[in-house]
Image 1 (cartoon, helix red, strand yellow):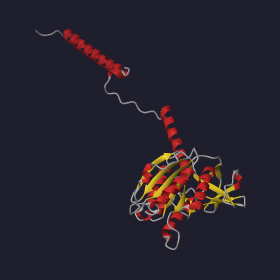
Image 2: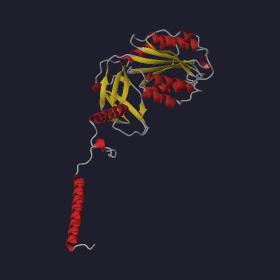
Image 3: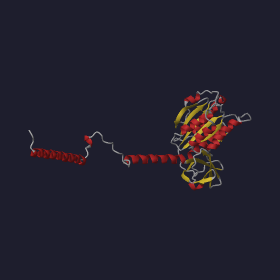
Image 4: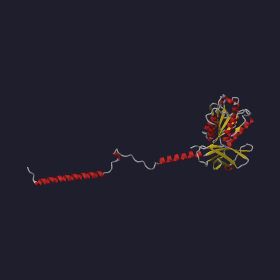
Length: 341
């Protein structure tokens, strides 16, 4: 049946209204989504990780500061040079009661500022090295007697360790206040080879772990060397690093047959470290020498300075000490090797 014109116009009006309402709904929904607040973290699994703060927490700052302080301590300790000085009068007796102003210290000829100075009596630690190589076969009893004499001169607060060396180095008594040689020392047998440098090196390593400020190595040997892995320079360098003074007693027989090269090794150890070379293997001369060594080790002056030469080049630096008194002489180590790197 044909439609009336009025009906057609009415339907078109309804359709246009419907389309207009749909458009309004879509626009409103879009605006609502755009303006809606972001979803909560707990409701979303696609959250970016939180960005770190530009400023470290207080604990990290404290740890970094402590690490820096530790580095500074290590650096200062490494650059501090400690020198033990023995001052004797014309009769060879220790000169007491000197002051900081009585000393001048030089490195490679340049005067250094003294950072600390000590003159108090303090305990010392000693490493006694007894040669048991084949060349000492007829002198071993004399060497043991010399070790006993040195131990007898120690004070109650001093400690000593005893080593024997031949083809190898062995500690037969740890650092102890005891004044007797261990029983093993009286059953030692001589062997052919001599590891003198290794013995000095081992004594220096062990002394470097001690708390005592004064440290000594006492070598009882004829000076022969034919078995060490370490060179004499390396052994001496380690002794200087440990602040150990070397006292060498030449146990070989005196006379034309004495090995001058071996004697030179013992003398070099003593002179470079500020110690003493004792040419007599026994008798009153040795007893007097040991008595004076024990006295000077307990009464040395300890001087420390920070070198003006800051180069860590591994080179040898000569040390010189001058006194304000013309009637006294000073004995100390001749120098040290600067750290490398």
